[in-house]
Length: 370
Ligand code: PEP
Ligand code: MN
Image (cartoon, rainbow, N blue to C red; front, side, top):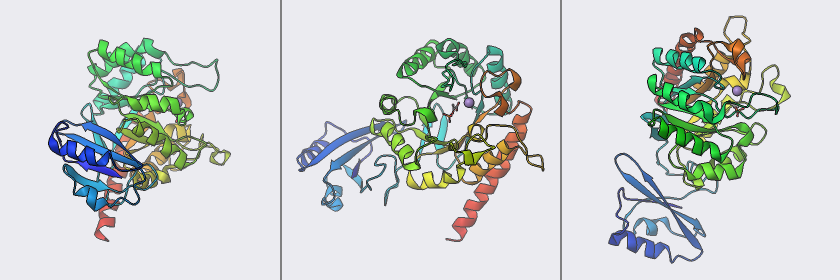
């Protein structure tokens, strides 16, 4: 059961003390407090865990300081959608809103290779009005002999260039807790020139200790990729690990499932699950066409499979697209064959605009039929 308190409740005031005194003496129930400090107000939620089935919600609702009570189903207690649950499905980070209703494009390098390529990429993003990107510094690679990413050495110039070109959020994969400290240190050194969305890759979806540590930081939003060989339920529980430790700014990423049935695509595209994740949880949903499709094949009408997959995600209501671009794909150190080129960026964005507008028309149509 979630007990949502009146905004800006005074924790030292009589109402709060009375409420806690009551809740803390309920038998077989633990109370966990979560505070979300927003720009306008501070919201406090109390999670009642344990024997709550017999607890009448009306009685809790009538206690001092209580605004709303949500009875939660067992699954995804914090991130899930529950009956009569009108909690927000959005958050804002570094001036960018992430929600189940809008769409952000994160086009950029799979892996940072040279400063020149980072700058060319960011300049192109700025020219096309984009304020988000992807830039990998820590790369989890199948082979120990493959390029592992430049790590912390590239962070200062990546962040400095992001500031120069007005990039507000960079999605960056981390594979170890020390990477969060390195990112924070480099951000400090560059005067917080940009913001970082910490990405947990498909190989780490069930790295529970990493999830707990990343979940304990509240500063950065987290993009959790779906595990490529586990059930959707298992991946959603992984997201719940982040939330249960305190991190609520979580985006869920679909990136295709490992299966030979996906052949000739790198993975089996799973973007029909966009509405499923939005129905089960309050997380914005990201699609990654690049790691799903994995190549630049085109259909006879001349449209790349990468564009088709992106469109499939967007028409299903995706809220974020993570997509590989590179100024010189032949020189890329990771995933060059699936990268789109800078001249393709405006075409890609126009295709996105067409499909998003079709999605919005579909929403209007559906609501007219209600
Ligand atoms: C990536 O986005 O660079 C990546 C490695 O993705 P995934 O974890 O989905 O394979
Ligand atoms: Mn990649």
